Image (cartoon, rainbow, N blue to C red; front, side, top):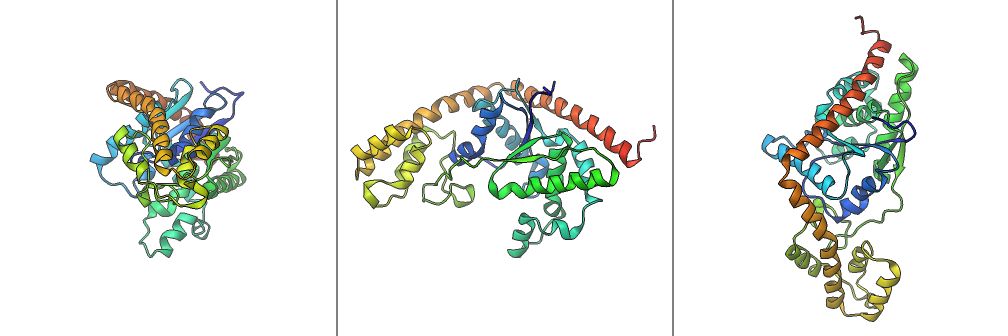
Length: 319
């Protein structure tokens, strides 16, 4: 049951492989932190993933993995509606309606489309219409806020523009969502010093084994500036308070092996309980599936209610 005193928060996560520390500290942790303050809807964006993932044998476990990952880090299904995008078919219906009121030149300004064209890619209709499917995801749940990085702010702006245009043409139906910019989140460096990213192959997976952590931390690129390996420090700063960390790095100035060993110890201590929780959830597949099913029922119930109003405004609801 939606709590009217709380803002509605919505976000989607594509099923695209193992999450890493950058994913966790950049977004995943914030959803857990906000679950007490907002009426939160978190969906697994399986239909969005179809623009790149077209293999059923990979898709099904990838969807389940996202659910496992978020439950393992502390997402409470009693507080957050966790669901599959494909369990709310009204979203694709609404996306088609938005297609009919949106111009091609407007969508050609979307960053993802322009980037794909600039790289000489043959763009699918799904990639071109991606922003409108996302707008439907957001607007159909009456979202007040959408947590995004600065580079994704345009998606929320497109949702707002689409809502305003529909409301102007057909009548008031949609809220105007606001982006929740996670400005306090620092960029997490990868083991090569660049931004941690799957596309760079420089990640430390969130649920790494102890051996993986040791191997990856020992391979972090270091520099010789002031005796402080900045990439090691930047990752370590995610786990410790600044005062104790500065003291450690001052005591161990120039001793890079010792500092990496300290980071290994702290990372293992941080990851181990998350990994253990995930391993337990893997054994309880029924619970994970039931969580998704219940979440889908809640999300679809809201979407069906919204679409009844939309159809009336369109003039297609005759019965």
